[in-house]
Length: 262
Image (tube, rainbow, N blue to C red; front, side):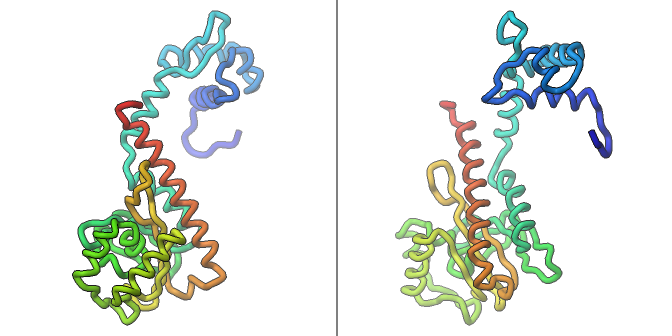
């Protein structure tokens, strides 16, 4: 086995043993694991005895078969208990940036504005970025309109009634036009904008939902409008949707683990 950096063969073998347990193979004997991994039976037995002492495996019966122990459940709960939106979203956003080459942003509603709570900049030499904690009006830009679109109708009306500031020549300031666009966003499940917050900048965004199906954040990508050519947009939307689905699914796992009834 090729390795680089610090490496402990004993630890690696113990992890290999643990990784053999799955839904299809919930129980193993030392002899079966030894044959599966190509290790001497005595080595596997010592590994199992150590793991059992620490609670990572337990004997399933008197025939010398083992199954995973409750210590793994405890460790899993520690991971789940420390998850929040940023922790769940950040690694998915990193992959999204690698796959699209665009900057990625995580935004949430705060009053009548959106707030950028996480970001990963594009590797492109010329790129678009936002300031962590930076605020923007909800009616301008895909990352903001995706949040406004899913607010309750009364909240949308109240926001529009306060007036729609024109940030750039491309900012939508007509109430009826904005309402029609928000309806289209809800219908298609994504938002797209060009130059509404910053001239020459394009963005795409999708909603992130919690376990109740409520939109809790927006996931967006942005860069120079020239990078959002018509032939690339379907791919970018698909990547955004895949990322949003993954984040929402992980949030569901987190919520289920935190539920008092779980």
